[in-house]
Image 1 (cartoon, rainbow, N blue to C red):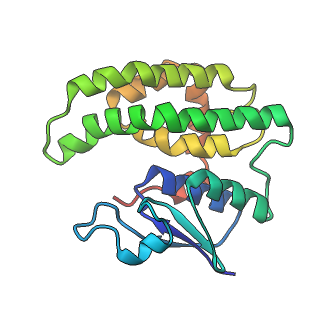
Image 2 (image 1 turned 60 degrees about the vertical axis):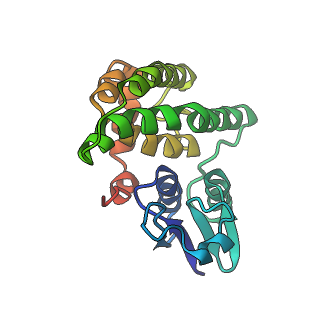
Image 3 (image 1 turned 180 degrees about the vertical axis):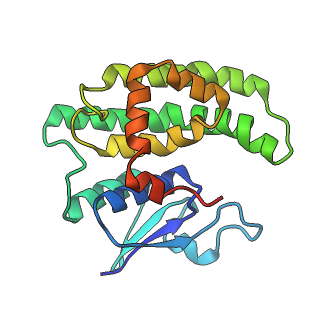
Length: 211
């Protein structure tokens, strides 16, 4: 059985898929595909992802793109601890959290806060302060909403790690590198405790970006 994940380790969504694979104990190969390379997306990659995004997934000729589809397939197709709740209501909350992260948190917390405050200055560019200022209330709403939705226990759904935790972790990993993000998270005890738990997972350390 050959499992390949295509993408770059700096990508939030590639990291989500890698976290799921590692938590399920799936041996896999990360095949480098760099969206920002001077040559652009290689032509062969369009066969795996028609829109030229990352990640894409392949297992013995079976191909998938879109991170949520990959994550759910890996959870259901491989042995190991279940990463989706068995009960319908808890599973619905998990899916709601993932939708919230995709629709609101990723753009505001990663692109509008981390990239503007950390990544651009590191590359010698000026931050867009208006963009940061507009994103911070959205980020705060995301954190406060996650805190309200969070069940009792170490993880977002309670006692068991789920796809919701693995979807959130790479987004927060970038957000807390910005001083505004770190301060905002520290101001929310429930989410601060969750962050300490997820950041201590061996899978989280194993997927730390190299660049």
